Length: 299
RNA sequence: GGUGCCAUAGCUCAGUUGGUAGAGCAACGGACUGAAAAUCCGUGUGUCCUUGGUUCGAUUCCGAGUGGCACCA
Image (cartoon, rainbow, N blue to C red; front, side, top):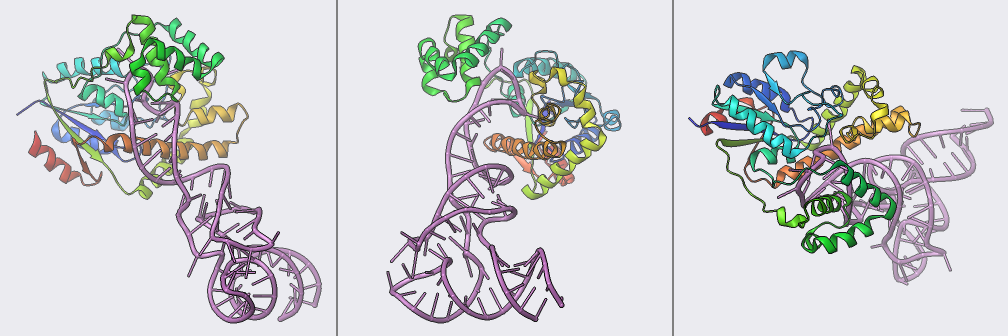
């Protein structure tokens, strides 16, 4: 029997949490969350973290283990998860990883290129430059520092350009020279299980879940962090819309509508991301027995 | 029952002096290597209510029908 990482993925609201708990229990193992927002301990209602009752059933990792005030990224996630897996495989032959953050999953499964951590001041300077001078000045600088990236990159996307500039300036080498696109070898097998259901049904679940979050106190949870609303960790569906409401820009009703719509859009983006990964085997979230059989046959 | 107004995209509505139509929102498709629930790019999806008439040609003009709204009974 191999050591296997069973990855359960799919768009938000599809039903990953319940299924993952069932599967982890049957396998007698633990769960690693691959969700870039459930990782923050301050965010509970709006990120739909598993309930206390669910968390008691199976030990979860990477839920609420960081603060919204911490800097965090996919690469840090990659290394922390690999360290944890190293420990867990001393006890278990299978570990379940579940979550919807495609890039975090990719970082763990395939790895991402190693880049230096960007100096905070440098990043702020570039952001300032972008605000003051606009995207065109970033493009011009990129063309000089890293013509290869300039050729390949989406030059309308400020975050991409900023990233390339930061790395190029900080290291003195073009950003593109770091991109070797490794598919890193992992000392364990990976089994990817994707969950999907009818679009209409998924959207109904998402809409309903947003209403439930509001009932559970999402507005109050968000209000506590109003002063921190510019943090990246709070640039998150469910929170950013309520901040707009607190600023008096939109009504509460409108904010809730937007949370629903933005959650649907997010789900669609997740589906686009996952659809190009040919290693994923797809199932309906309620066909638990089929999924268990598939796992048993492939571990 | 009578009179008037309205009927165009999923919704709210523009519009075509008669040459088969467009905005906002919603929706849909995609990209993605360290901010990723982020960020960015792309796409009108339509028996113009039905049915006769006029016309080379009707979503547009005229008649009838159906449905909705308002007012009068």
